[in-house]
Length: 196
Image (tube, rainbow, N blue to C red; front, side):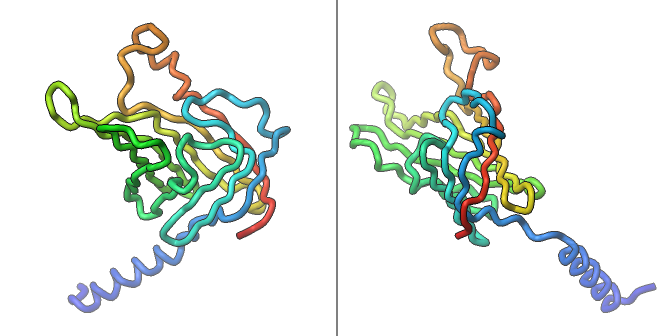
């Protein structure tokens, strides 16, 4: 039978062994250029387009994405993601000022093994003119999942999305998720140009 000190020592040794056995999380930092041949024809995903170039900066606490020629439909300086699993909500002042309308961008990053899944969503806040109550409008959430490939010189990005608030009508017809291009999936291959 173990006494209190021996039990504590056994637990600490087990925890340390488990933590040291886990591989470090991948670092996606670098400049990545699309491989058109390997990526094939683009699949339409509403709310985003294929980026031609991705510039990724990653620290232990944050993942920053800058794109050229596509990507999520939000300003580049707002494509920042915390790596601790917490949401980041930032005010988007890139549009002209509109009365009774504030646009924000919500970002979230979650690890799934060695893959990093990011969510980017435009959110609006206003006051209902009839009731005086605050209301929130949510747009399409762009979802990008990042995975490193061959020798960390290949980046596979899966593009898709979803709607937290589906509209009652889509193209003049009752909303049907099967007809909503926001949920399409597109897989894109990038090759590393340089490291950062």
